[in-house]
Length: 273
Image (cartoon, rainbow, N blue to C red; front, side, top):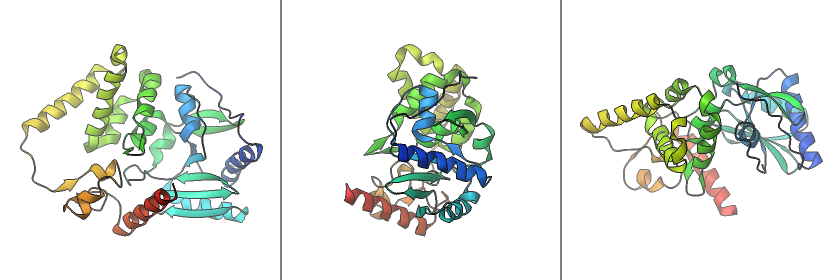
């Protein structure tokens, strides 16, 4: 196991810190399981500290409505900006993200997240962190014009490679293994002297899959999976060029209503910037 690393955020505003700690207490008292992710988990695994604008808590989808109800009863303002993956709890200008899926609908928080969670101390309280494998899985698909989490993945692999459950990581990506392979290839470019951190069998397995695909006749289908990586940059593909959106059922898990809701939210946020 990796060496324990207590996580604090001494530069937090006292009111913000109190709100985050209170959030832990509210969920614990309600006996609702949660995992801490975001900058806190990233610091634990990589030792890279960075300012975070919020607190990311990962929860079971089945618990999300109850979580909002519990916080509302405590006097906090709650919102559901994206019904397929995200809710928020506000205390003044501070907020906590309640995350139960990936934004592309591709990575629902399930029991495995909790089974392999890491116990740690955050802001003086004992909590559980998202496993590094699931962090890599969820971050791997973030390749938008204004945000690319590739550096985070490279740093997670560099820090955690010896302890990663590589078999589980491959299983998480499933048929979307090309996304993982792309990050592993980039890792070898970023750290040419540390390519051995990725087990040979992993690279061989993915190389064989690629060779098999290259040798197999291409299936004729007009499908764009780019929307799983960037929700807006491939909008023209599905709206004007006639490609099927990989996020939508039956290829994906999102409904048309959820997709419209999320796209509108993103465009509203961009208009504010």
